[in-house]
Length: 82
Image (cartoon, rainbow, N blue to C red; front, side):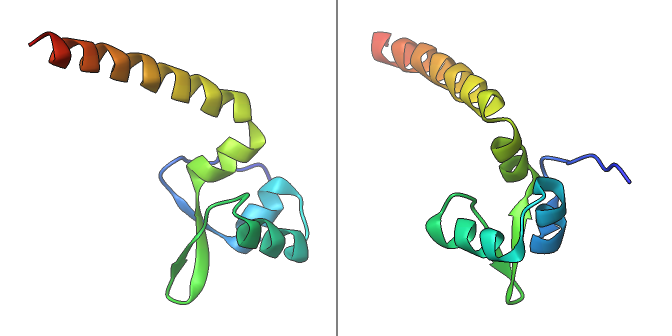
């Protein structure tokens, strides 16, 4: 069954492992090392969809960061000109 990953949705570690096709021990190791950012909700970890997408497609994140920095630079320049 194919599912779509939504950026603003939260996923359990089990759902995330299914998307990434990794083991439970790998999931724990990645969370502990900070490779994947997770938040505890009710004593259980939840992972944002955008975090899963970042791992699946890092070039998308790089483009987003580049676009953000470009826009930020323009805003800073306008502020400094005042």
